[in-house]
Length: 473
Image (cartoon, rainbow, N blue to C red):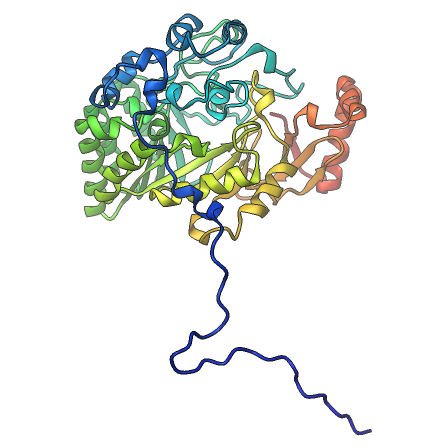
């Protein structure tokens, strides 16, 4: 049988001398360049308390620390002409019911849109309002990641074979409502008596001794609390002590600071010099020392941020970002894409987007795993791969960081997500629970029945391959 092939009829542009080759894309939509539009000017003067504050004063990190808001009365005094009295009353009751102490920097307060405080993403992170609170999922805990269970000495968590988390202090420049360490960070609240961490050089030595005794450890994260709060001499002390341990190859100083008090990088020369010295000494020893920070909203990034990050960039200090996925903050695909591109624009590498940890008192901030999967799908491809964050779940019960898509089973109807961590804790299952209010009324009712809830969990584990042990949060 003879087969006749039709001639190919599609035509393609042919490059000719003096003419452009190939197909040209249409002009880019302005929205694609929005990440470059950083907030400019002396925007803080819109706040009554800062109306007469000049640039030099506002950029002074010591002034920022002194003027940080720590309770409802101070908040009222700061925004008295901007916020409705009903909002202040709502915040006052929210402070009483919060698991975290309250501390908000003037920079963060000035970045809030006080015309719409209830929907503002920065207010949402730092200032609780009672009217927004939701009932906790019955399986939430204060230490859902079981950091204390993996703590061989105070202030140290050793979960992964080659990595440890060092917590040398329990204070921060601001206190995030969603903090995974609300069991330990900040002052005691009406809701929580805090667990002590390592806070003195004597305490730190026990951690250094443990790290030195474990040759498998190569990677140390210095967090807390917040490394921003370490005096320059202590930052240098900790950095040098860890660099002196031969098997330590990588160090990460973790801080929320650049997102909430970027001016410290401009006016605390001693702190920046100490960080630079540790980074440069590490480089001479063939060891990698970087800074990890924590932006959650594109609204946190202003001209001040760019100027501050540029100080680190010019000194050759790598900065990576770890966000938390939160309702009303960044759970919109377009907002997350803007955050990722804006971070990249100021030379901060988007590294992780975490599922909100299952901690008490902030249920209205958590999202479902399904939401995270959809946002990840949208963000991927919008910029270069190395500037695209991994969306992960830090598995409750101590399973460590799991790619959001890597669940063994997802019961979407009941909000039960089952992960395993064979290289971290083999033979075990770890479960993340979607917020109750994202489920149907029928599913919410099932969670009210202890026996029904246990049966749902058992069924999900069985469908995930239930030979493993379940580790509750």
